[in-house]
Length: 226
Image (cartoon, rainbow, N blue to C red; front, side, top):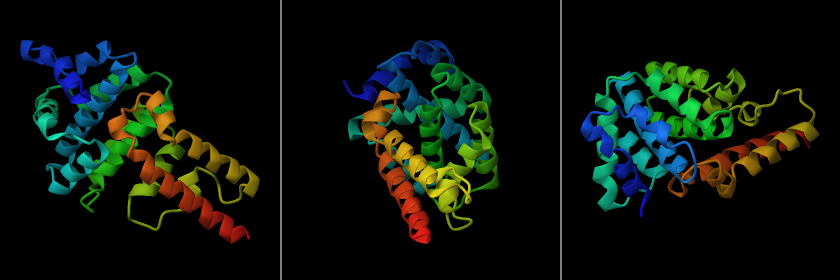
């Protein structure tokens, strides 16, 4: 059974008037947590689309890059997205429920925010309302300013990515400590580690870009220190 079939099954209650946000409570444990992760990205993407007032083709393509959607499951994915856009619940309520579901698993919440950044920046026009949206979501998720800046530095093209921000270290941090931070991020970014955190196999493509970004940052820093 595909994850999209499971998602469709999970939201059947919507036809009976139940809020989309309320289904998160039933998806707190594996393997349902991967379904919840996917719904969370779709739902917050839909709310984010309302933040800047439009959904571009590039953003749709970016979503497909994060989640591989088989043709037979496209209708189910679109249904979740449209229901989230129509739901009266605000994005803060969604974000609060998602935070409660994943608890202190901050790495999973970072994974989720990373997917949103990927979608938001896909069209090359990172709207100020999207920036405010993602910063607020990060705050609700309990992610500090350093983690948010680390993600933003990798995706937002308003400046050349700062390798130190990408690795979450200060420029005056000793090289051995920077190497330790880099290795920790590499471990966290392994597909097996991401799946263990609740990221569905369909979304581990996120790890490919992350690995490229953090390895490039480490190479740049180590080259300067040579």
